[in-house]
Amino acid sequence: MNAMNGTLGNSVRPASLIALRRFLKPREVRERCDLCSAEVGPAHSHLFELASRRLLCACDPCAILFSNATAAKYQRVPQRVEYLADLRLDELQWQSLQLPINLAFFVPGSTGRVVALYPSPGGATEALPPPDAWASLVEENPILGALKPDIEALLVNRLGTKAVHFIVSIDKCYALVGLVRMHWRGLSGGNAVWQEIDRFFAELQTLSETR
Image 1 (cartoon, one colour):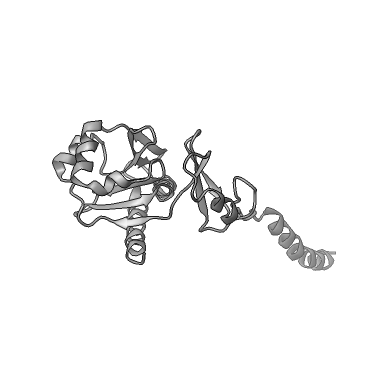
Image 2: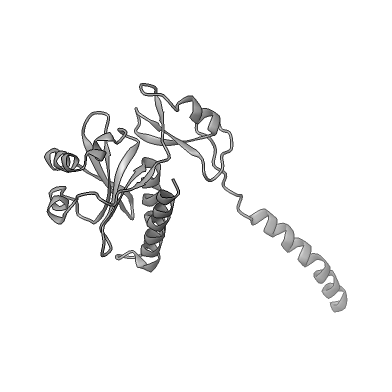
């Protein structure tokens, strides 16, 4: 009886476990276009919805429809990464922007007001820098006056020994926000999140050199 039970158990258990693993295996999350529901790859386009001020994933055909749109419901987010080696932003100017941390991005809005956002464990935290402080920064750095409202940003990283500045598309800024939120641990963030931030900016530097 014992031998029979043992043989039966050995023949059934592997098949049962395999079936159970297939049942419990998490389904692969696939991103889809928010307009037409077509599946999109990891490196897909984004649209900015003006009314809700949110980013939407877009397949190439849908993104092309809004490539030159200026007054439409959506604007296509450009894939821009530009390293600003000569940006003039000293410590006094930075303090005048009144931000609590040394990592932030600045987005000129279509209303004319600039919004500053910085990553946090809970997502993007919004601040409103004094308009005269931003105007002074643009006066010294005219390139900032050409930022496309709502969809391009000045990204500033002053966490290391040397400050770095980029003009980037807004989707890259929110990718940084997501990265911080995903990897932050405890009160100080933990080593992993700081390594991920360093990797993120190293990739931006590489992208800026190849465009």
